[in-house]
Length: 108
Length: 116
Image (cartoon, rainbow over all chains, first blue to last red; front, side):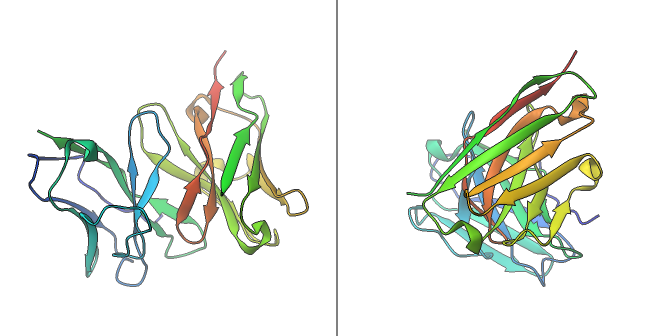
């Protein structure tokens, strides 16, 4: 079955730029989406269609795509950005959906 | 305001059954696919199943095929997940989500615990 691969953890200091990657063979042909999840809360969509920022999401959140890897970029990281981040994409072989394993962002 | 409200979770013994419901408001329900996504305690998100706008197509993650059934009632703006032959590994918070290829918004989830 189709898989998306994320690093388990990323650490950055406040004010720095965090980059979280997500790799998948079908990503050149499928959009990727990013979700932020804080403890005890439901996930929130922060990036749509590789690089679009939904309404209400701070400008410091952006996304990029290159080949089989998409990247969530958080510029000027703030303490409140500490959370788990998940990438997601449609399954390349069906109308199912797939999540990456998630990345815990720690703000030092 | 878009709202998705899940219900039906609880404690069930291994091998038992449970039916989750999700009541939707704030958008035209029959314009969208709907999905269920789950999260086991301390684990990541896992897509479980989705259903097409008119109910004519359903997809499932391999681990629940043959045990879970997703359905919808467009007249009542509701989506359901019938879960049979439940296992300990099905223990999770189950989220109802609007599915446009991506998931937004999310409900608050309902906890399903499978234990004896």
